[in-house]
Length: 583
Image 1: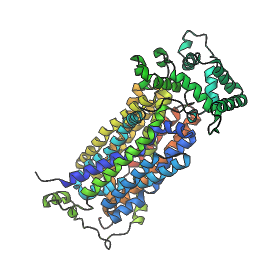
Image 2: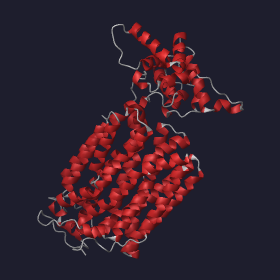
Image 3: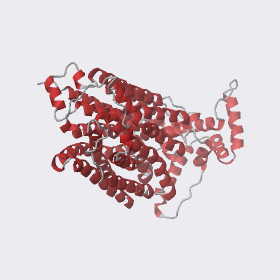
Image 4: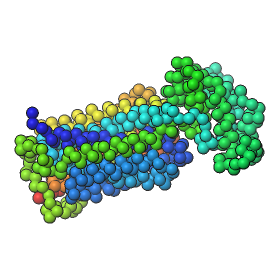
């Protein structure tokens, strides 16, 4: 059987696409850990999520132009190396400024990935198979996004499996609030089911855990809750008695509070299986309690129980795992970049192992592809791009659709946590389901646009999948307004993912249709506007959530933007190329 070099080339572009989304959205699934670990506010996290898309959007056309000028082999290898280095650097961030800087850098490096992959498809894949090949590469991105929640959660938990359960002074985010929660009295309702209220359950756990404490420690907690200045003085005196020759580098109230919490952690099991079922707790904790845990696991389980009883007040134990995940993902990118450089060439005719038969198959049905030289590279047809109605319409469609689609990868974990009270591991699992469902939509969308072109012609063959999928996603977001149960919400979000991904191959193929010799630049132009929409998404959806106080606002906004995206695609005409020489 003759070798199919183009299949290897497309497969490596597929792997690059998997890595692209894995590195892009890993922040979405650890941002709650990073927020607590670095002491960030909700606004800072919102801008951290948005920062990537600004640089990613604005660098789309320049990076596509670089690919058209210097070739996909050299540029995609460089892009993968740079964004992988940025992902690894995420493991060393120490504050908001560094988070923004690194995310901006990753966005710049990733901007050229899809335009370059589109150029590879345009050069290496026969005309009749462009939609399918584009769908395969695009589904690679969705696979990366789909496995990101589960893989990231698994790796975070694995790296944190041996973390020291002892509370360090820096782990106590608000020592006075911790003390207040430990000594407060519950406001019990007279209703029979008052004992089921999460706040009452947390109070019971804290009372159960603090009862064995010495009176001096209980008195300190009372002082820290009601008289912070006296608590600080007592903590300073306690420090001097234990460390007579050493100055403190800690917040002394946090240091003393951490010591008291560690007495609880080192004591008997404080978790009660019945109580934990009424709280948002990690699956690891609930499973261990149900299975009668061994004695050596009790300190870890007590730490996780305290985190559930003191939500947001002590650093999560899983915080020990998110930094190594970044380093591992960065290392994976170096391997993929090396493979791409070894296997791929800018043009099929340049590959030393390609056969004449395969070259003929690649070039069937289209004009000969001359290999560009430094002297023959044409300038970017900027005037043709700026005056192309179809290019502006597809850009508008991508802009509005991305505002809504980005909800799935940036806001969905928060929605699952707040609206359905899911823990880190549970929301990672459920967030995976819609993204995996989208894989099928992506692949079927590639087949659909190729078949529609054969049956209805080029224009309708691109328009039908785009319009239909946008309207289906609109309907799914409208269904979420009914505040569905968790299974129904996941089903509707899965429908959004399938519909959104179904449109991607037709979008890619459309840009290849009108791009001529400037496929990477054309796709980069549309991606620029699409990712400006993605950059705005966390900002405007968070504003909609804040103004309405419920998820109704974000869902209505997403439905409206998907409907507008569908309207834009009604008037596309892929028969009008921006490349006058190709025309």
